[in-house]
Amino acid sequence: MSHQPASKRKKITELPLCCGWQGCQEICNGEWNLNSHIAEHLETYAAEQQQQNDSEHACQWNDCVFRTNCAEELERHAYYHGYYSQLLLQGKLECDLHPEIPACCAPARMADKLPDLKQNFHCGWMDCKREFVSIVEFQDHIVKHALFEYDIQKTPDDERPKTQCNWNLCHKQMDNKYRLIEHISTHSNKKLVACHHCGEVFRTKTTLFDHLRRQPDNNTNSFQCAQCFKFFATQKLLRSHVLRHINGFKCTMCDMTCSSASDLTTHIRYRHLKDKPLKCSECEKRCVRESDLLKHVEIVHNKTVHRCEHPDCQYSVRTYAQMRRVS
Image 1 (cartoon, rainbow, N blue to C red):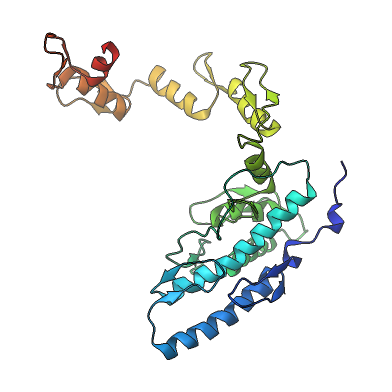
Image 2 (cartoon, rainbow, N blue to C red; image 1 turned 60 degrees about the vertical axis):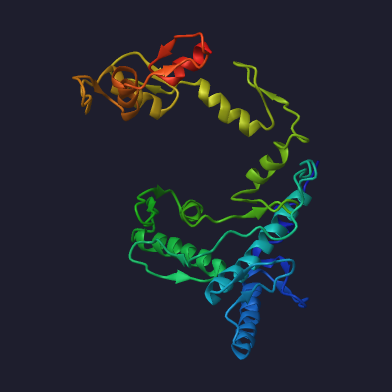
């Protein structure tokens, strides 16, 4: 089935977005224009509240019952309504472009699903202390960081080295500015689409489609693993599962292979390292992990005795888990 070519798709910034402020029918061309339009509503609302000397602020967005005593929290909330409207429309557009994707069977949203926004959006870029009330302005700001970083790290002969992310505590390097922009969106928790039916938000259209396919009414389980014969709703989920059967992490001290780095780390700590840093306070037993030490103390040194509750039974054990096994 042919889909609409990318050249004919509307860009996110060009989507016509309807303002949801009560009594307003304004259509804004893109999220930036809607963001500016909401700012005008907020300015008018603040003036009205000041005249009425009312300390409680109620959201004026259609079907929203949010209330707060913090004027700035109301602003963050209202701007997020505009951001969320764009996500919903983008999600609907993606589904319209892919009619083979099943419709959402989850309960329909009765209103916008917005997170609690108790504080402003803080930029975590190195040496940047800026914060934003508007989620749209915040997301735009961090993209500018990525573009600027790419420009200052390129060499005089115009070669493009790996560009480093300078978000706090992150030192990852990306091949180009587009990869960097995609990467920093994980720091800012940026979403690209929302399910137009139930309202859940997603980072990519692929995860939106997975959300639709994995629902019980839509899950055909047509993708089967050749090794364990489990079924999956999508090819992507099957690929992720198959990786678990591939032991790609080999121990350098023996022939053991593991399916994950964490499993390999556990193997090395138990099989090859003599250091057992945790010592029992009751005896000379030493353990690698705290959970092992706690289990040792419970089995060997715990004075608590669990007795069978049956009046004619004298059975007793040290741990409740042992009691459950024989009950």
